[in-house]
Amino acid sequence: MHHLHATIQGRVQGVGYRHFILVEATRLGLRGAVRNLPDGDVEVIAEGQREQLDRLLERARAGPSHARVSRVVEQWAEGPSRYRRFAIEP
Image 1 (cartoon, rainbow, N blue to C red):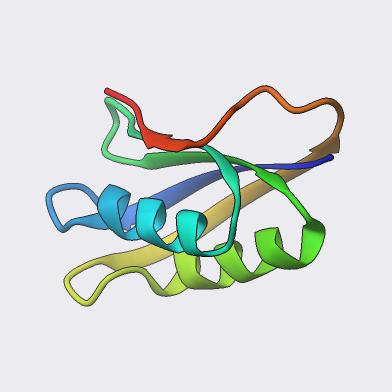
Image 2 (cartoon, rainbow, N blue to C red):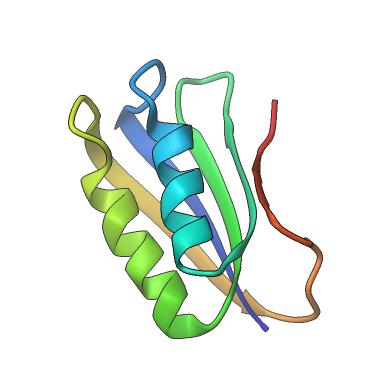
């Protein structure tokens, strides 16, 4: 199982970014979570097939229409699945 951990920086809170990622990840059949970080960034943890994770990362770089993504820091790993579905975490 491929794992993606991404931190998205820019104007990504208060613009529907987490919901956008939830919809995209679910559409791609991925599992994981998205949450706001205290510093204003958004964290995405996703697992699944590499091709679908690459597509999610591409969409994360674009974001919803009101977001302004300035940087995406990504880390990749492999291992067993930890999630049953994709969800927004508090």
